[in-house]
Amino acid sequence: MKRLKQYSFWEYMRVLLVFIAGLAVSLLVFSYNVQVRTEQNVEELLDYNIDHQQSQLKFMLNTQFIYLGNIADYVAKEDSLMCEKNQELLSCMTQDTLFHAISIIDTDGNGVTNDGKEQKVADRDYFKRTMKGEEVLSDPLYSSLDGKRRVVLSVPIKKNGEIIGAVAGSFDMVKLSQILFEDVYQGKGYPMITTWEGKIIAVESDEIKDLQDENLFEIYQGKFGRNRERLESARQDFKFHRKNCIKVKYKKQAYYIAYESLGYNQWMLCYTVPVSVASEEYSFITVYEYRLLGAVIVGVLIMLLVLWKLNQKKQTDLINRAQMDSMTNILNKSSIQYQINDWLQHGEKEGIQALLMLDLDQFKNINDTYGHALGDEVIKAAAKVLKDTFRSSDIVGRAGGDEFMVLMKNVRWDKVIERQLQELCHKFENLKIGSIPCGAIHCSIGAAYYPDHGMNFDELYHYADEALYEAKRQGRNTYVIYHQEKKA
Picture 1 (cartoon, rainbow, N blue to C red):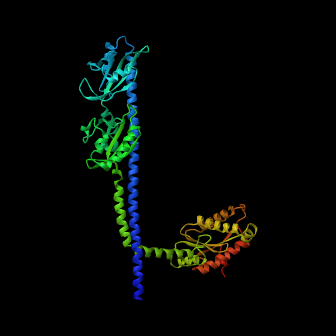
Picture 2: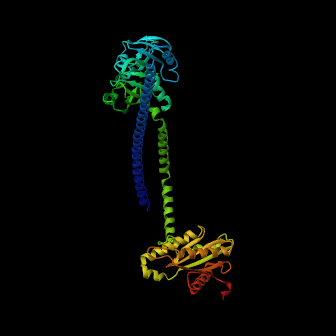
Picture 3: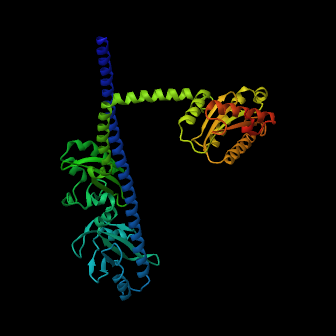
């Protein structure tokens, strides 16, 4: 016997070790899939953000072109571009706008700003293109007024179809893009604007602010060889103005770079954010993974207890299944008899305990006329009516065939019982099942009360059965409550 026990123990341990190994593999696969899915979600969010901000930035630029165009239409109405009225207009036009300065420029490239400063821009590329009738967004320029790096939006001034000058507005492109992205990841990332070749036109970052005019691909690729394949893919995306998101390393930290065509001058709008920041909202998953691992370890330790409880539950389910009628899923005859008897002997009783015997009238005719399959549906429907009519605390069961039994517990007044019996007869009379019409199904009910008519199940069953047969003799489809004077 001892040898047999040792063999069983080691067999069990072998199964347990296989289970643990399988569980460990499952956890690793789970963690890997979670990580992959997390990265996908982060990249999808970055893709959405860059797409949304690109649309916003493009919309803002288009709005500024419209704004400058309206100014151009207004100043063209005057006889002289540089007249006092136009000067007064310019002096108040930069308020509540993105522009640092707005200028009116004549065809010779001589301009005057909103604050009265004169400038000469005849050699500027944006001015030459504007004189050809284009609306121009210039490359970043160093302002002739204050020496700061800005971009210029320029639109032609037309009068009678002829170009007579230009209206130009300058603003800081970096600050514009920064405004758009300041609420993304609490401002912990930074936007960049580059050419399609990767040259950084504008950037706002403490880490790479000194790399203005450097090439984006060379910055990241020069120090980390593992970035080269991803950056080469990004280089092709830039060339063909495709949007995407890649992960690279810079100064020993991982970054996401999301990018999309700006829609002007073949520029690309980029947004760079540390991976740790972008993934921060998913950090709780790692915590949960550790918790899961701890739970698994505890689960293995208490596995025997769980198995024992599951076995106990299975035994309980088997017992319950043995107590239930298989067709109607209510108590069977032996179980309902036991439960009623137990309640009458040990339950906390108050008021009346009413035992009801219910029988379907002429059920044999229903079987013969409509078939046994439909007859079974009638039995199931009858059980449902009983479960829906009585309280969950009442005891409902099938005594066999088309006969049912109910114990109504702790009823204060007998009128309540009579009202319940009337309702029950009415419900059966209105049953319609399959091809059986309404009014074809009836029931007869007999009732006996504890303690008036009996003190145990056998006595109550006897008198309820007598009352049931009295209901049959009275023509069925009714109920009868046993009267004490009949007891002899």
